[in-house]
Image (cartoon, rainbow, N blue to C red; front, side):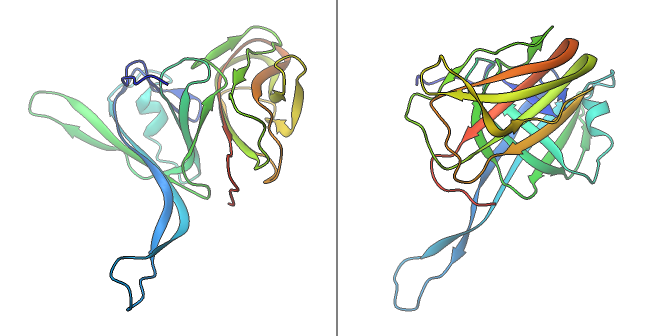
Length: 245
């Protein structure tokens, strides 16, 4: 894959598209804690992998308009939030997501008149999860649709999967986003447990498949239900090795 810049990235929080208000992604990090287990007969550190963790920090510009950053962030909820970073808005692009606690919403008014806010989202329960987008940034469906597939290029895996959904806008009765896989990009089948809870408005969700579930080469997101407008984004993580939460 060629090298790229960070131009054209997106940032979503619980079904809010904050891409136009976020000026910088300050940190995206995660992984297991390093547990020191160095014995006295060693001349170098020994470490074991401990609990998984993760976090995403960003700086936003103040925007009090409806559905923008102040409305999304000012509440500082104690409940979980879903935060996603899209490296560009190309179908199949890299994306990172996490279930997190929003720790702060700290404003700074600069001498030059600027007004920015720092936000830290720390993972809760699962750690940071890198995957690929099954939508080209935000996707808009006006009726039930079979989305275009993403080729993961290698053979099927048997270590399970995770997925994230953001619904930004909706008109209708309900929409269900379902994940499907295929070995040949022709015959698709629903992933077991791969249907998100039917959405009736702005929302976000995380799904998790069985830890030994097989995932085939091609993945896509389809929609069903009764609606005239559904704007949403999906990130899918196919595990390449055993993962436990």
